[in-house]
Length: 432
Image 1 (cartoon, rainbow, N blue to C red):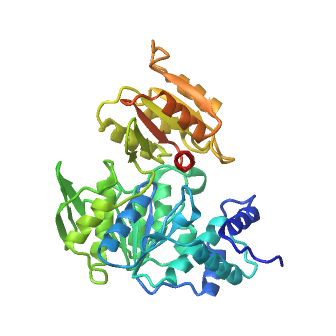
Image 2 (tube, one colour):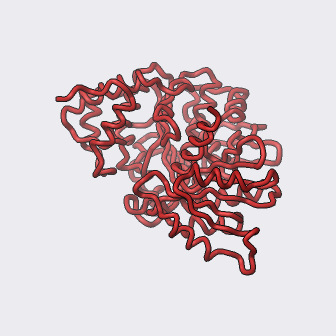
Image 3 (cartoon, rainbow, N blue to C red):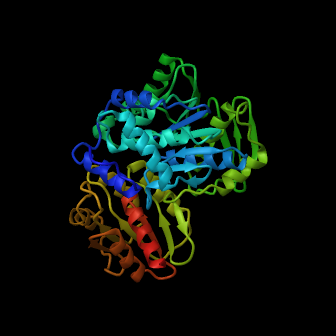
């Protein structure tokens, strides 16, 4: 056997090389076997969060409120933008390379030759790391779907499903009913199961009832109301009034915040959170790449919107921002997405498109994207008012948008985590 890597970059390279061919391998038997050999178990409450959109925001709000309340919090969130360490947070800080290498070594020893994908291996390692870090609560974000996601080998005390929309159809099915069933796979008999989708698929409700989960539905078991200044949450036995709007911007964030507060209501005996700590946690939450507005001018917005539901929300949020002379888009997307439906809500918002290839074999070709976008050109539009240009990387597309945008204009980076990550990396390198 060759010696094991001793650094995090070498470990990640090894995991990527092991699974160059198979990216996703459905089924949990292998992961469960390694989990048992690893003796992976949590001695604290576990909150699991699945959904098409809003998972990361909900996790970030939970983490922020619980940290403000004085608890030690473990968070597994993905994907990462610049550093793999972003996926594992202990008490609000990214895990160190050394801690992750130690966890990888433990999983490798427990693997005993069992084949694990990159995602399965790293999920087990980060869960193991969190379980050994003396946290008061663990928050685990599900990757793809729910029922067959590697995170689902862990039993949650509270499960949350945020929104349910069409995405990853080759794995999860092509209807909200099929996808809702996959998401509901994280629910557990006798345990609270929270759904913040305003119109949950019947398949999710039926599954919760069949297994005897304690289903909390938005509008029935918990709800929210808001005006211009503040908002309030009402649950089964707890009200929270005069709440600050979450620091995460966008119209859908009260859905995510309500789900987070419902989970905290469920856990109020084990993890009580005071009114002031809850307000502060929501007011101070941070999450990169979710309608993230950068300081300065021109206005710049980073948003990982990569499916129709997220794109429609992004268009709505942009519409609420006030006047900008021109809007430039830095846009790259994976070819397996519903590209036409992602572009449609944004077509009326964007004047100038800077289309980019992404650093992934699944990237859509910029030339094909550009052809689609040129068909959307308004009749009679001059070149000053509408343009489409292709670029080899998000950094080049972003540099072009930045060189052309005036201080009363706006740049929107969207379409994929890879698009936003590429621009974040370019901004970081320009600062050094």
